[in-house]
Length: 371
Image (cartoon, rainbow, N blue to C red; front, top):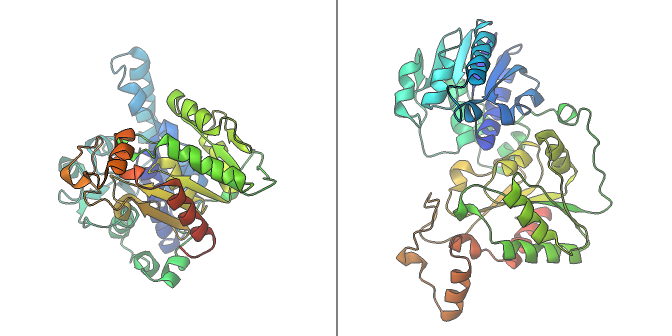
């Protein structure tokens, strides 16, 4: 059986789809997947043994010059490549109009979420078969339920397990082949315990204050641990340099491919992350990770896995899903000292409450198996 997955972005969403691929490969031996994915994330699907051809698409780049001759040629070449294979089943795992539009260009019956389940309900009109998948659960489980319904197999019992035994049995569900990830790359060999600080994210409200990162870096260096700081743009690079400045064992990584970053994660003892795609990559590689959450809901989109821990701010108005803090009445400080501290971190007030000491204690407890 040959099937096509359409799940183009973002990085976290692509990674959330991997356990569903593993489920299908276990339930349907011999199934082979091709995958339409945004070009920036095209390395990841090929790390799964059940994925054959990866078809990169460049919607993010093409939409900047939609009428340019080069864009038209590139899209025509993509369409020809997509139409060259007839699939037994095409599954839109994203539930957006853009992904449904891409799925319609493939040859094969299209399955997707029904209008009550999709993020953009109109997308469901593009599908030959529509499946109901309830909201209110983790994104990984929702994709797994969609695949089970589309391919007609029972969802693995471990996927629904809340007890420790079931979660442990499901720990390898991402299915990534580390040999594929590290193919042709040097594998770092740390001389001492190493932490990776995944400090970059998109929304202003999802950032942990830079001063907190700096204090955590100082504490980590005093413990004799190495620190690695990746970055994805100039702003993140500059922040990484400020965090690492003058701190022994702290190193800002060079601009890297996803595969090179994955190698750094595999070599790490643990990661500390905000709500970011690289945190999900660490989870998929089974690297112990402490993820910090403020405005987003870790129960629905938190890093998923056996060795993943999530630390939420605990503010009454969180998760608000707001890209900019509205400074609601629930956030009024309890004292003058609190007022000064909150004013200093006006963009990220909820995450500012997670002090470096709290984070370090949670990290130590996680590594010791207590948290």
